[in-house]
Length: 448
Ligand SMILES: Nc1nc2c(ncn2[C@@H]2O[C@H](COP(=O)(O)OP(=O)(O)O)[C@@H](O)[C@H]2O)c(=O)[nH]1
Ligand SMILES: [Mg+2]
Figure 1 (spheres, helix red, strand yellow):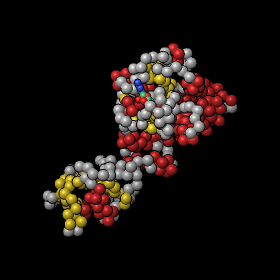
Figure 2 (cartoon, rainbow, N blue to C red):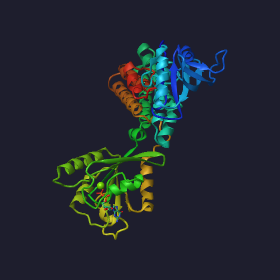
Figure 3 (tube, helix red, strand yellow):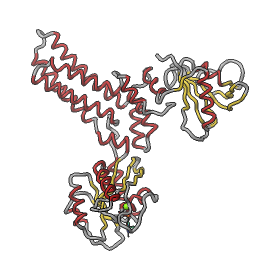
Figure 4 (cartoon, helix red, strand yellow):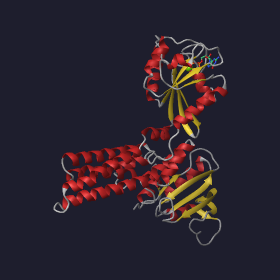
C-alpha cells in the first residue's frame, strides 16, 4: 500500500475552460479541505458529490471552483481521490497544486495515478496501458482497439491461455510426482498436442503489423523521379500546401511528412526527394533518406508521370521495389497519356491507379486503397507491440517445450513451460518487475 498522497495537474497545459488538480492517497480528504472551502458551511459534503466553493491561500481568494472527494475504494486509484475543478489557465492550477504540496502532498510522477490503480488491483497492466492508448488515440480505429483493451479484451485472452498452460503444467507435474501411475508416453500424448495447439493459438492472436499501425499509423512513402508530382500528391491528400511544389526538378530535398485520417485510421505520409543519381551533396542526402523511408514504409506509393515514357531511373526504381508492398500511381492523368498501365505492371506486379494530383475527384480510389491497407481486424486479441512481443516469446517457449519433451523427456519440458507462463504474466502484469512498471508508466502524462 502507498502511504503518500500524490497531487498533479490532470489537465493539459495552456488555457482552457477548466483545469483540474487531482489528489490521491490517505491524506487527500484532509488536504482538499485545507485548500478548498465549500460555500455551504456545516458538515463536510458526502463522497462523490460535486461541491461549489473557493480555494483560499491564507486571506486571499485564489479561485471560485467546484471540488469532489471520492472515498476509497470507489475511485480511479481505489484510494481516496480528490479533484478540484478550477478556471482553466496555467497560473491558477499551478498555484493550487503548490498549495496542496505545502499541505503535505507529493508531486505525482508520470502515470502514477494509473500505476496506483494497477497496484491496488483495480485494473491489470494491459488495461493500464489501454488508458494511455485511449489518451493517445488519433482515430476511430486506435480508439476502438484501446477501448477493447480497457474492457479487458487482451486480459481475458491471456488469462484463458494461462489457464490452459496451468493445466498442461499440472499434467507434467503429475508425471514427475507419480512416475509409477502415469507413464511418460501417456503424459507426452496429452502434453504435446495441447502445447503445440496453444502455441498456434497465441501466434494467431498476434499481428505485429496491425499492432504497429494502431500505435503509429500506416507508414506510406511517396517515391519516384523528380517532378512526377509526389509533393503535389502529398499536398492534395493532406488538403494543405505542406510540401513546396515547383516545376523545377529536385525541389524536395528533405522529407516532408503529414498525417491524415481515412476510414478512422491514421495514415502517416512521407514525401521524399525521389531516387535518382545526382552530384548535388544535399540532394544525395535526400536520396539516402528517401531510400530509408522506403525501407521503413508499410506501403510505397511508386509515382510516375504518365505523360512521359519510362526511363532508366524509372526501371531501376521498379526493380528496387520488387518484393515490397507497392501501389503504382500514374499521375498527371489530365495530360495526354504516353505511359500505359501495362508498360509499368510488366516490370512490377503491383496494383495500379491513375490519378491527377490537380483533380481532387481522381483521388477517391487512392484514398480508399490507403484506408483498406490501414484497416485492422476488430477481432485481434492483442493489439499492442509490448503484448505481441511477450506473446510471441510465450509461443516460442511452448514450441521449445514440445521439442524438449519429444527429444528428451516430458519432465525436462517444465522449465520452458514455466518460461512461457512468465511471458504471458508479463502482459497482464501478474508477474512484473519494478523496471517493467517504470517503463510502462514512464510513457504516461503527469496527472493520469
Ligand atoms: N498537369 C499536371 N501537373 C502536375 C500534376 N501533379 C503535379 N504536377 C506538376 O508537376 C510539377 C512537379 O510537381 P511536384 O509535386 O513538385 O513533383 P515532385 O518532384 O515529384 O515532388 C509541378 O509543376 C506540378 O504543378 C498533375 O496531376 N497534372
Ligand atoms: Mg517534391
